[in-house]
Image (cartoon, rainbow over all chains, first blue to last red; front, top):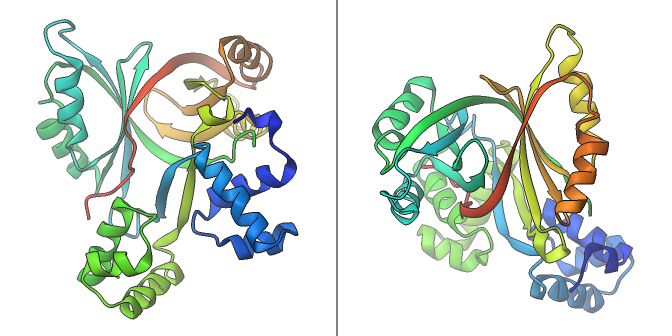
Length: 154
Length: 151
C-alpha cells in the first residue's frame, strides 16, 4: 500500500486502536467497529503485512520504576572522517540507559533519549558512558519535564 | 512496589512486547497464571500503562520526520500553554516534550515529502504563538528505538 489517503475510515480506526493497544483482539476491535471477527482479522493482517507497524513498546510509568529523570541529548561528533559512524553507533546502542538514538542532520549529528534514576545517576551515565563514546564532541543536555505522544495524522 | 519476579517479567516483556503470553511466561521463568496475575497487578498499580503499537509512518506515505527545537518568548506567562495548545492542533505533530534547559519544547513532525514539510512549517508551525527561536533537525535514520529501561 498505500498512502494514508487510500485507507478507509475503518482502517484508520484500526490503526488508531492498535497504536493504543497493540494486543487488542480482532474480535473486540471488530465489535467496536461493526465488523465480523474474520473481516477485522483480515484487515489487521493486511495493515501489518504492509508494514504499518514497526513493532510495539511497553508504556511504563518510569517514575514508579525508579527512573525519575529522562534527558534528551544532542551530540555532535568531534572528529568526522577519523571515527566511523559505525563505531559510534555500535557503542551508543550498547548503553542500557540509552533508549533512543536518532541519526539527524542539523546542528547535531545524533539525538539520544536517556533514562536515569536521578540527576547524580544521569551525571554518572553522561561522564562514564556518553563522554567516552568514540568520536563524541559537543554534547547538549535538556532534562525532560513532560511528554505527550500524539496519534498523528491517521 | 515491584518484586524480582515483576522485574524479570518486565525485562522480558519490554524486549519483545509482541511475544505470546505462554512464551513470555517461559522466558521469565514463571507459570502462565503467575504471569497473568503479575501483569494484571502491574496494570492496576499503574506501572504498566499499556502496550502501544508503533506506527511506521513511511509505510503510510510520510517519508519525512523533523525534530523542531523551540525556544519560547517567556515574558508572557501563558506562552507555554498557548504554544502547546496550538501544537496539539497540528495533526502532523506526533510528539511534544517540554524541557528544562536551553530548549523549551521539542516537536516531532512528520510530512509526506519536503514540499509538504515546507508548507507545514510555514503555514502551521512558524505561526504557532510565542516562538522566540526555532531550529530543525532532519531525521536520517533510527539507530536504536526499543525504549527499554535497565531494570
